[in-house]
Image (cartoon, rainbow, N blue to C red; front, side, top):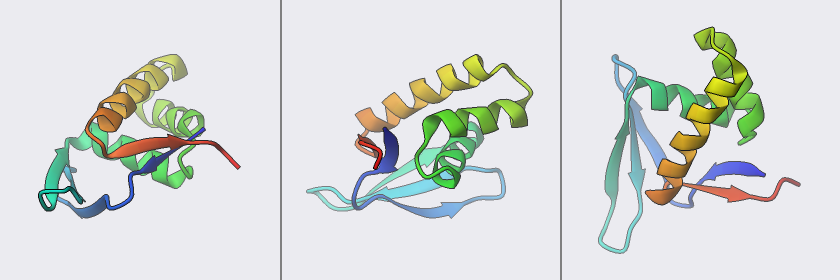
Length: 94
């Protein structure tokens, strides 16, 4: 399963403090969302690994010098929050 941005979700900026800003299309117009530096790192890792959350978690574990199971648990929680907000979706891998 791959984790992808929902159609209409795009990155508008990443500021000097590592905060990612997303813009999502909605029925009432564009909505803006922000991620802190940890969420930004998770977003980038997922995008670098074409939505493969296992590979993204392994990268984050190495970068953060933590156990892979810890990075995976944190990533899974963040993904669910982003899915609940309508920003990410899961799709079957090819």
